[in-house]
Image (tube, rainbow, N blue to C red; front, top):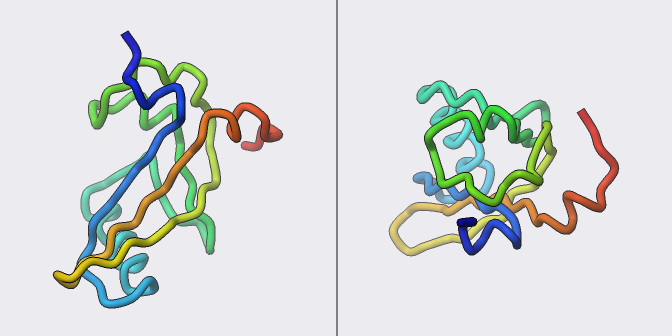
Length: 104
């Protein structure tokens, strides 16, 4: 059985302490490095998701994500909250992924 959201896409969110977007991104880079996250990283000004490495982890429910493969460049969106944290979200929509030219 597929996860209900798998037909729409994949959303990855991080909540970091910050007062602005630049600080949030800097804190996210530090957190990913500290936790030795190999499947997601910043390269220059781009964020890259290694979908194959992600699917090899135990981080999330993978059923229904057969369509997701390779290395993707994705853009963050930001949600500010009242407690000094910023939520950073990266979304990969299945339709956009399947229609985009393949890159590595």
